Image 1 (cartoon, helix red, strand yellow):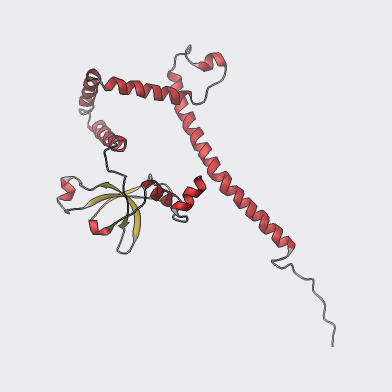
Image 2 (cartoon, rainbow, N blue to C red):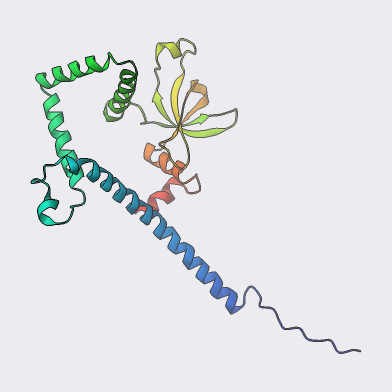
Length: 226
């Protein structure tokens, strides 16, 4: 019988070399999981601070700007100035004289065709978000959309839409359907109540599910944030 040539043994998946590579890979992805959210968060916060500083600090008189006598800029100074200025503006418009000035300004804007539409929409959005009494975005639901048997997370925006809409379909509910992973983007749909299922879940948890593409439960996302 001819001698069979012995072939060198190939490393099996359970060999020490494969085990080291698997460990290094797991460590790498563990580092990515920790560093990526932290790095992106820091970058977004820093970009916002720089954006506000660049927009606000140039309006300061040279003698009032700390950079002129410190020799270096103070990060976050623009945000502090913006918060103080907005607080003072709120105090101004809270009295009768300030309210009168605001009404006069709105009357002037109402005479400009394009500007009045933009201002009216933005004002309604900001007032809705800032209002504590509004029910908008305070109820998470499952809505059957875009077709039968397909359910997506949504947030109720209005249970009493404008008469132009409710007159066509009685009892419809306005629901904002967010997009993953950015819940700030999405679309507004009007659906009948039977196509809505209330969720026993806070809006914050529902938003976390959208952000995570539903790959993690809301409890798992909360555990990661602790």
